[in-house]
Amino acid sequence: MVSPTVPLETGYKNTWGFAQLLEHIDIGILVLDLNLKVIDYCNAAFFEVLQDDQLCRNYQGLYDLFVRNIESLDDFDLAGRVAHQVTHRGRLYGHSVYKAASDYRCIFIRDITEKSRLESIAQAVNAMDNIGFIFSGIRHEIGNPLNSLKMALSVLKQNADNISTEMLQEYVDRGLVDIGRMEYLLKSLRTFTMYENVDLKDLHLVEFMGKFISLLERDCLSHGIRIKTRIPLDLAWVRIDERALHQALLNIFNNAADSLKDQASPEIVIRAEVRDQLVWLTIADNGCGISPEQRKHLFQPFNTSKADGNGLGLVITRKLLAMMNSSIEIESQPGAGTKVIIGLPIATQTKRQVEV
Image (cartoon, rainbow, N blue to C red; front, side):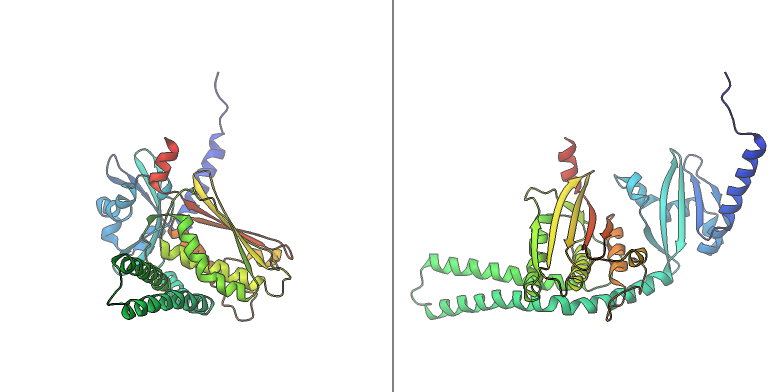
């Protein structure tokens, strides 16, 4: 029995239509045959994007530039589809790699040099806006351990002649703990930097969130905002860049705090759970919410409903999360608050334990 097939004429028209689309699209498309080590296909935009005729005809050069490092990753099937960046002849290219078949790799390429430059400027502006939000918390958190350390040193100085070894050890240990707290706070200031690349490491999310909340809690309480956490202590570790996650969450909390102005009982609730091989972190507020029209443009640059806002926070937040193979979704209704849901990749070691 012969299976029904598409008429030749119809099939021919569809093929012609797709070919025309690929030739007129402004994204460079490249297909490499790994078995024969040849360029199987490339569209016209590919030459315009790269502007390097010699490289465009060099299979090995293209493979080394766009594919080799990504294909060596353990989770290539997932990681390849994420946007990557590479520099060539002073230009910055964004690209994704797909396994079209066992021996073929399809690469989508765009020149993002100018886009990256503008985003870097926007990120710097956004970082400066956030400094005021976090400064009071950092000042208080540094002041406490500093005063404690000063007091311990004063006691040691006054009792230098007759202090016991046990007491000396106790005060030294206490001082080291205070110094550690200040070191973490100072490192957190490194958040306000440009991000060309992220440094992914396994991170204990419970510990990270505890330190992060301690930076903001005092400022939130001064505005009557309560922070509640619903994070299980045995939560899986995640693989992210600590500084980038710090910056992304700071943007989200900043927005939440703004939406809670004039609310009767303002609060922010943080939850976390493991689902579908990801850690889902949810930040929900009971603020004014977002209108359907505003939600359509949430991630567009310079789109904001704040009188003094710049509309860059969520744009940068999504960029930072994407660079860490993470996602962000926002659910909101006017008068019903806003819920931000972030999907974070589970650390490799934790993932192995879960599979076992």
